Length: 288
Image 1 (cartoon, helix red, strand yellow):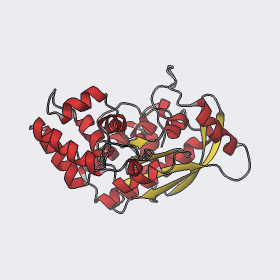
Image 2: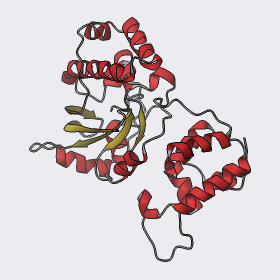
Image 3: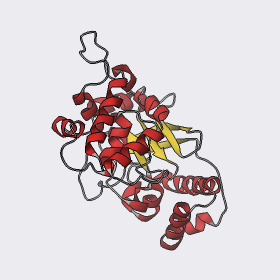
Image 4: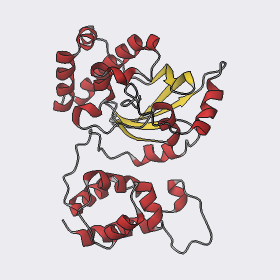
């Protein structure tokens, strides 16, 4: 670990980014060509004091989560991200896991959709990042580790994961999740992560085991969903997805179908804001 070089590298990457590239307003009165320290801190979800310490090579070793957040905020390439983890003395996360590097192109598209609920997820439906309206629609991303970061796993093992979906949708969503997982398994060549997920689900969920035996396979590219919002009630939406070139990540966004009141309810989301509903029945499930 070399916090001094870590700080220098952060500073060099910060200087090259223009505010407009990360969705910040341009200003002719700016004193620096790139981002300010407080802007990087805000983008990474860190305090300004803590980020200042990092750039100055002081303070404690940054966590893996903070390194990932900084890599996203600074739009690092995969090689630059690997170097940042090396300087921080942290192991590089698995390519497909919940700490995977969000493709810069996906992140750029996400930030160009401020008025549309949108998120970037892995191929196993672990949410990597979502915008404010997606949080308002789906709920906050739960803090889980390992296999539980996969929404597919929680769908079949935790009843709370289904609360954001209309009950009439549950059977359909189960079939779609299983068919999509089989397609992912084939694309990845049945790697250990996918095999482990399938093995756990087969042994713990009779519903999953039954659907898996049907051998259905289909990548999930678009779907219509009826989501249940704690304040706005049922919202029928089209869920569209854009896959990365290697298929490991997906940009999801939600639009209102023609007719009905879904468009009005989407507009109300901006007013309602992100509702972190802390109840015994609504505590777990951002729902991609």
